[in-house]
Length: 155
Length: 475
Image (cartoon, rainbow over all chains, first blue to last red; front, side, top):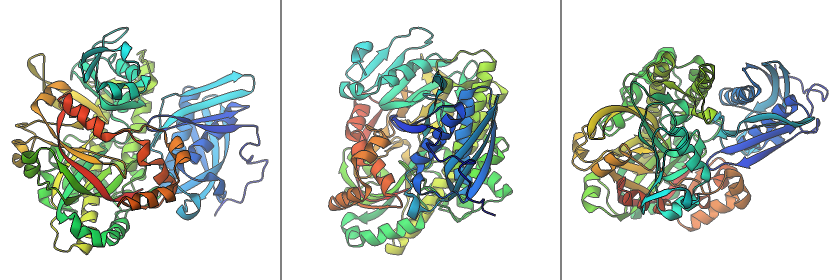
């Protein structure tokens, strides 16, 4: 059964929490950066940056939800695990995701990703992601309520 | 890169003297213009690799080197079997990504009238691009057989000819692969991806041989000016990516738990003589076999498509060579023949004449070294040399390397316009993604001609033939 369209209080639209995402230049691959008022928001924005590297995310409908769980010894590895789990889900489910929710409890992450089956006609695909790397990897609260999560993804 | 930070050994060889924790020097093979165009990160990454335990002789970067993750892309490093390490980042996520070139004996003039028909047939036959699925599904037993057998498995299942195997590195199969060390998630990721091309810089091209620089070697390779060849650039698909992801993580956490200080987390590695190291080698070799099987299947599909347009064409394999690997090889180091584990990350093995690993019919000539391109620009066939074997463990370049990020390229070019522009230059593009085409614009890559010229001047390999694309199938 496809998930019902999530309500905004369950699934904040990208940018609702004041976050944003960016790509930064890397010779062969794609650098991506999530920025937000909380660590969780930065992770959500980082996931959006990943999906925007893969295809046209603005046209993704939240038809199905996938639940994700990761655990890692520190925030930086947790961010890479979060992205790599999403890359796995894209590859094996043939889905693109456009909406994310992250909860972090210590070293554990529980997340949800909403999206739909890839439709090349609508999603203007660019490139598949092979894996998130530890290059330029940082998860840091730069100042109060200003979190950054970034790394390079091999494409 | 600032050349003032390097010691110039010759016009095409530069040294980074050991400093800090470097156990050996760094050596960069490139001319001054290529060095100046390289990111400073290349020097930093070459130096970082030189700090790893058991590294032998030097940490090398080749003329196409660019900023990678951990190791530079275009990097070569060899390690002692007893005291050395193996690095998942030193192989990369796309284990055994590589290039194969097949001869057709068809003249470009014969192809011209049917070029669009052939492009359509190839585009239909070879699944390409994100989300594309192959028609082959492997159950658990067949997956294990493929991971152990590589291209040999593919030929046994009817994909290609037994004669192909002699023209693939290691006879088409990495020995000592351990399918049992390939995780269920890696297998799951490969479920629908056998015989698929992938996306990004992967491609299938029909190319014209436009220049011959070494007539005798070219004749021995079967390369004749004016004829067309089929070239495939692809790798181990999702299975290899997942193996890389999982072992990079495991090695990172294990290194930190063991108190090993690494200049970069991405350099995470494990001693060759350790449980993790041996497990990675077994899984990585299974990943190599996946790539060899995948390219064998794609080659078979391409032959079938070509046969729809040219039913009488014979399409023998010239060679299939990988450029993301770690292999146990014998090399001469300080006058002594010894075993080392050579990491090549974006670097092609380039064995010279007489090398025992070469098939008998190529042994007198040397190994074909296949250099990829971007659509619209030239590709090259080089040949390995004895001199090159002594330079960087028998390694040569693998491609041009990007001059511009994907993001910049997508801002600068539009896919549809680029396809039209390339058609006006006589190059037919077939792709599911206009954005993907824009990100792979020829102008986003460095001049591959300068890269192969520098490789030749550095003695890494010699130029044999220049190829120009006529049809490019992109993911």
